[in-house]
Image 1: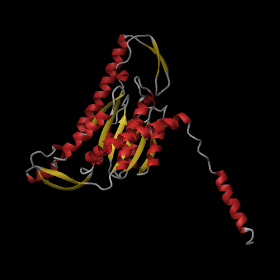
Image 2: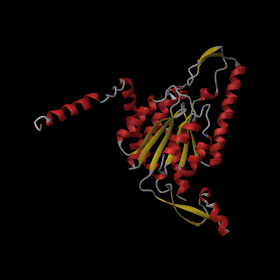
Image 3: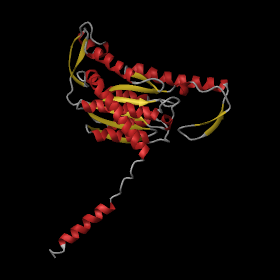
Image 4: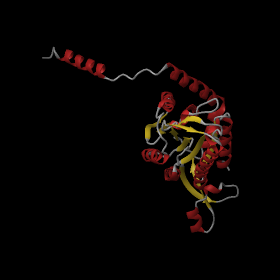
Length: 314
């Protein structure tokens, strides 16, 4: 009996290895795209983005330490209104520098991101932004997690510090949910409920035909939220010539449209939708950046880092 045991174990081990599903290799063009994003974004990190990121987020953190009396120059958003009302004089919240900061990326991967009227698709822009922020965080020894959103929670990646984790995030942003609708209210809710640790949360979306609503309010109540709006000019100024055949990127439906009247109605509808989102962002007092497909995004990010550093170093 004992002489048969090694062979039995060997056969079982071989069967386990053989039966394990093999992941199909990634297409060569996708691998090249991921590698290009890795090289270009890591170069930007090396050239100073990591330092800008560190100065913008380290030191303010998201962990409350104490309240202290207000002094001229303090950021008004740090006022603790409950203590102020109780004490009859203004008090501000003080935060301690977090040694273990978590950056969490909520990335819209719905069908509308497959469009881009300029040099880059919105989906590729979302992947580059995700890679840049993730590599900057990893360089500063922070953990990075992500949730991919469409009309549902497509994928939840728990926070990690590894380079391979960042590369997987980039691959998933480029390939997941390409045909899905956008429903940020539902998918962001699911992500926020799953995310346990307090984080610096970046919400990356074009916000077309969707509104984050109470889900963004819940995220802002617990996390340090930054909204990155992916903006393509043609989304908001449709062509007035026609008739032309257009395909809805999220439903796949084809339609014949055209004319100045139709273009005006579409532009007005987009303007109202966008104003609703911007109004919510202002009401919640969270940071908002417009990331355009027709302009370099790095100056916008660096300027934001510098403004944020000055705001929280007063």
